[in-house]
Image (cartoon, rainbow, N blue to C red; front, side, top):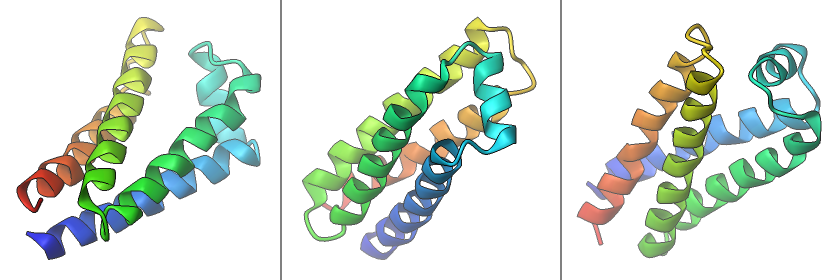
Length: 116
């Protein structure tokens, strides 16, 4: 279970870091998608900071599991908020990405709790 946590935490951290980078450099596709659902561009750095914090927390959880579990819960809440934002904007085409990431984000939490 510990090895599974490491694999899932590292993969999720890479996804979070990539998403944060896209927000910080204002990637055209990401910017268009977020502004279409009503997210102001001023929020991009804050959202990126949350993703970076989640990624670092998941990686720190390899050494100190409670921190990884807490970060995992934060990542789950982050993607739940993203999914709700897409659904409230009736963006059915954009909703699957945060939905899948929400489901994937549950894995480090479950594995982290199983290996405490």
